[in-house]
Image (cartoon, rainbow, N blue to C red; front, side):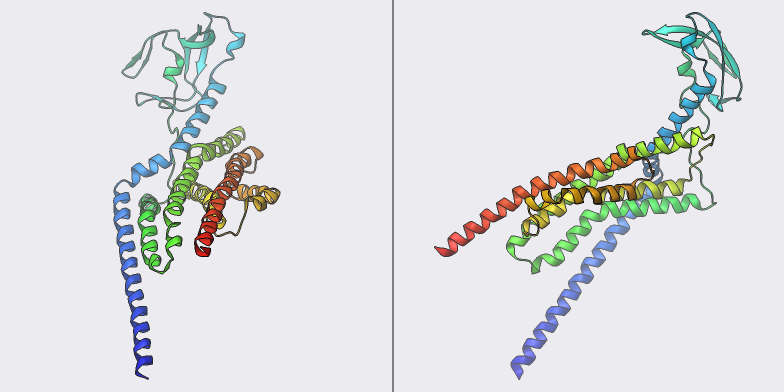
Amino acid sequence: MSNEHEEQEGLQMSFLDHLDELRQRLIHSVIAIAVTFALCFTFSDRIFNFLAVPVKREMCKEQLDKQATYGQPKLDSLNVGQIVQYSFAQQTAINNVPVPVGTTIRCKVVTTNGNKSLVLADTWTVGKNTIAAETPLSEVVNSKSLVGCGELILLGVASGFTLYMRVALYVGLGLAIPFLLYQVWAFISPGLYKHEKKYAVPVLTMTGFFFLAGAAFAYYIAFPAACNYLLGLQTSGGFQTMPDAEQYFDLIILIMIGLGIVFQIPTLAFVLGRIGLITPRMMLKMWRYAIVIIAIVSAVLTPTADAFNMIIFAAPMVVLYFLSVGIVWFFGKQRRKEEESTELVTTE
């Protein structure tokens, strides 16, 4: 009877030890999140400006295209040296001096590297600024001179503070993820076998690498293409785009996190291949079903309904799927060799 009581007390102490360990890991995780949140809140304005670069660049591009379309005459039908009138179709400022819409200046047609372009025909004085004749018009009208080019708006009085809080929270969580994963690993590792512990380093490395790759793909390729399509659609419809900063942040964070998760296909394939749940032959047989699932996922993630942007989102997923076939073939084969060596040693 006493032995049973001692075993029960030992189990109870072991369970309490696990609870104490879990409590310590949670406290460390909360402290890490608080530190990264405070750090990111200090630089939240710079972080948001970095995230807003894609939409600002595309908005400036659309406004410059609109200015060129409505303000610049057709150069193909003009002769070199001919004097034409150029009208400002967008609200513009030259060194902070506003130039009203409809202002007309004299320009001359010249050739530069075999292409026709416009330069100022006369010296132009704007406020206290004097722009010399022969100055290329492209230097006068650029993304920095367009008023309101790439500006996002806030609808509420406290929206700026709320936005920066959310930026700091999301980015702080992202920075704290490696430490949080370590805390999870430190908690569960004592209960794993030795061969299972060997999977931790490659799995964590692949998870971090492919998540960053997915977020970078969303920021540099997928989202700018979607912005270009959406802004072009609204401009062609005669609308003036004034994006809400909070809605924009929700959209770009959703796409970056979504593609970061989608890019975990090789990591998932590595884990399933190592434990023997999938094989390269199985994946090759099911490639048609995989393409259908990838098309559905890309349709959900894509903020537009056009086929071009769906292809941009789907193409890397298809590449990652077939890359996963190679990963499963290599590491699955390696595992089989390890099992055969173990069986041979046991037999001997």
